[in-house]
Length: 491
Length: 95
Image: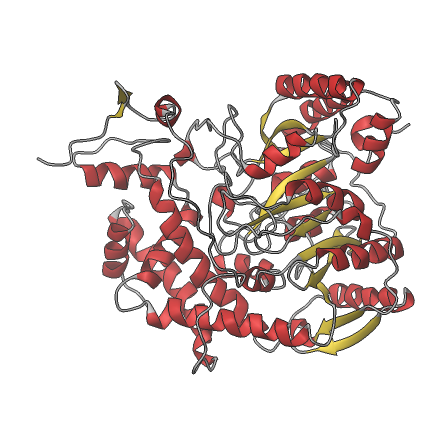
């Protein structure tokens, strides 16, 4: 048998059910793998091996009593944006200091309810603001993948870079993540993993550190489409503590995996064929179309004419919401407090010392676009453009059941290569940000390798609350692509 | 639209972010280039379009106006930079 930590979640759950190994043995294998890899990869900002072993033993005891839950004994990593009771939660920011939440986020509570075991907290861009994990106060995560014949360290993408790298390097069976503009799907594409951003409102935001509340949504990063479906089924569900959580039943998402795609209509949005798209990404996209056709789906071209305006609209709406959400970090009730001669100086010094450059940049943009005299020109206009983008999707979904696009405009890039130009960094999210604005579900899955041997992802976008169709299409693409490559172990 | 160092100083004050004088010019340049890129939104015809204020069309639910939680002063204060006798200790607000 493969090393336990290298199993898929499904294989691990089957092995646990068959008593081939215990949850404790599985957790120990994960803990050892983390200890060996983390100094090189920096995926975990806090490993919790003792808690993992304790939770695994409790899981084994539950199984022995015949009380096994859906995720019984599965060891999971948690993005350090989810509040975990009694376990330090930082959002990868100095401003939270050694914040230890006295409460548990709903999403993680759902995982533990179903028997999962926590391995620790995963690195991310500070407050989930970034596309390369380089804005983390804990330093960047290193992608387990390297270009063929090169030792150059690459970013795993962001903001859920720790989650994606940990899954790719077998440092957890699956991980929680969050996605405000592409933060689940782009790192999944950069690391050869599967990432799902569900419909806005599918997963509770309660206990998730807020970035941009009308865009933030939690979801899983996992090794296979089926694994992602299993984890999302546990994460999702209505929560009265989040007023935007949708009061709908959660289907068994895994039941959609492996179903026939015959008769499904898939749209290819021509407006995603942007200038300068690398040839190999265009080719992979065409290949995806061929795979879906061969599996029996009907593919047609559609238009989403406002696509190019999604990213600039996002860079008004997200910073505006962030500047408002991050006003709470004032040094009074929790986190860092820096001295000053007046109350105002305490605020200003605390926030100057606690926030990193990218977070400050976004707070300033947000405060500017919301300030007197500029609100209508920027914020109100962006919200109207957002409506145009959502209307484009409504029109497309009258003709098709889902859309196929590339996930990101490039493969993983080198650490430090794109930090000089904020706008160039923002362009990473050009294909993913549209679904956040429209509240729609999106899935990224690995579909091939670049000429340098790095993973490339394809994205499927669906109707609101129709993740099921995405899982069906994603599993068909997964079968056709046969992507089984793992990063060569150098750490 | 370009923004100048004075505007950055004003917005930083609004956002309660201490920015040293030497950072104002570079920040003005950075923010101007981002805002310049954002201005392509002016090409979009938004005449008569309702602004979209939430990601899904759902009415906010109401709950009974009753106490559902509380009595956790120790938990609430557990992460305070300074506290005493069940209170947060903060800098003097009124001179």
